[in-house]
Image 1 (cartoon, rainbow, N blue to C red):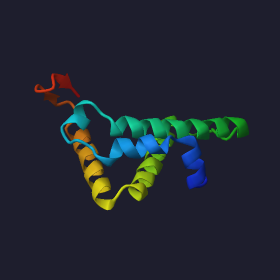
Image 2 (cartoon, rainbow, N blue to C red; image 1 turned 135 degrees about the vertical axis):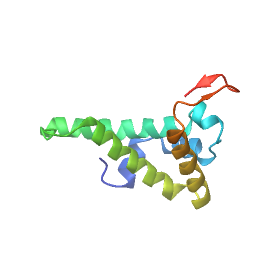
Image 3 (spheres, helix red, strand yellow; image 1 turned 90 degrees about the vertical axis):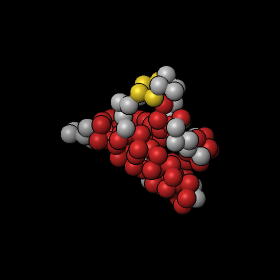
Length: 114
């Protein structure tokens, strides 16, 4: 979706992305996602750019938006893994994975259902 790091950084608000994912609270992130929303916002921004490019070139063809969005999220994860310390990235990605695994669990202490 983006050719290089400069294109990525021009498309995405990287400072807010890195800030949102630097310290991920294991209890709050699953109920009130901060990092997850920042990742999705970044992925949507670069996927929107890609889809506009494809529309202009009539290349969409069999392209699936869900596949494009998933690929873009992978690009965002890759960017974060380079910008965060290895410990911060490892912790953040583990917590995000745990939220996916535990999806549907209602945390009564926060009175919020995932």
